[in-house]
Amino acid sequence: MRIIISFVFSLVFAGAVLALTRFLEYDRFHTTSDAVVVILLLSLLYFAVMVFFAAISKDEGYGYFFLFAICAFAVLAIKTTFFDYVALDYTNFLSEWIREYHAYTGFWGIGAPVGNYNMPYMYFLYILSRFSLPNLYLIKIFSILFDFVLAYFAMKLVSLRFDGKYIKLIVFFSVLILPTVFFNSSVWAQCDGIYSTFAIAGLYYGIKNKPNLSMIMFGLSFAFKMQVMFIMPIVIVFLFVKKITLRSILWIPIVYLCSILPAIIAGRPVVDTLTIYLRQPGVFDYLSANAPSIYQLIPESEDYYIMFTAMGLILTALLIFAALCFLYIHREKIDNTLIIKAAFLFTLAIPFFLPKMHDRFFYMADILAFVYLFYNPKRWYIPAMVIFSSFYSYCNYLFYPLPIEYFWVSAAVLTAVALTAKDFFGGIVALSVKP
Image 1: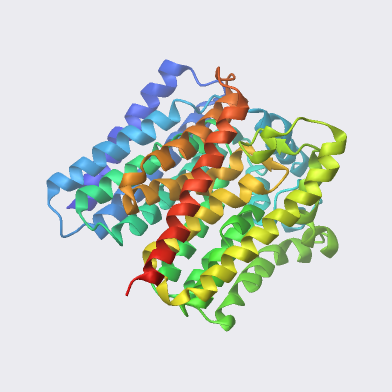
Image 2: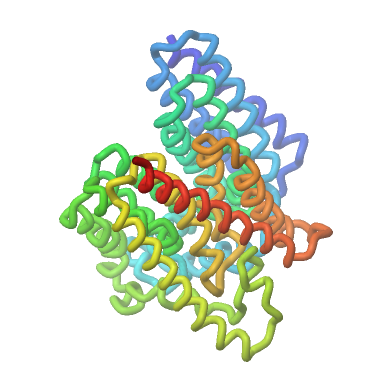
């Protein structure tokens, strides 16, 4: 019965999206078939979300199911209203890479030396290049798909502490409308939600003592983006508390190598493919690319860039090492709550202290900040500062600068890092001194 209801809701959703496209006069619908494909894909996405929710909530009443259906309908419809927005990343990079792929044919085209994203996402762009469809919309739909999966795993992390059905619903839809999540996919046409989905899934499965599945998720995350490294110290913490084994960690390089193997078979040079991540930081020569990091507190100059780039890398490595040493010493005190707090601290502090960070690199920190809110509600102002800082950075790039100096935004993130560290390390010390 719920499948039938889901199908009916999907038909209504298709009609609503059609009305929206007519009202908003989408610029990239050049033919009727363009509109049909986009509306069909959005409706299929909505239907898939509904069917999945029906499966995981089959013991709940129809009222709960209808509430989910209406909320999902509203969120997805609102996301589509931003589909015509074109960010510079799409104009300068994504659309150009798709255009370059047009020159190649067949399987061997994925071996072309195009773009500086890792291969799994480039496979997706290559597939798009095979069709004369509105690529901007399809890129956004692909990212929004992972928004829903990301919201599910964020909900699962919170459910480890609060298992109420309405709490789960609040978490799920709150994640979907977080400024970072909403703008990244629907407006920016970026893919940070993809690697973050796999990373948050890896965190969840690690906590649930599923080592192989956890490491496979982290491997998939690394296959899409290098920024998963912000949360990777948690893998060492999993080792400390014996939630994973050294053997299970092998899944990370195995999954990564499998992800790039098709491109190598298709002719992309091995060294070029393996060093994509090593080349990415050299794209620009700034201590901070619009990121609310500590380097916004330092005046811009070439001398400072050279000096603080090296110092920042060393400082970050030392901080991670010191934190891991502390956690190893107190490993007997580490529980699931502390693991989640540690993951939040790593994803917040590492991009804050690392040089050459982008505005989008606090994406995972925003998700875990929201999860952290449920584990430490008295410190609600920490997630508020983190999420606002990301919102500020996004507005600064996508729309217009907000009337606040970057100095104060970075100072807010520094405060959040300090307070989170105090809460985390202080809590462990307090546990250690208890009789």
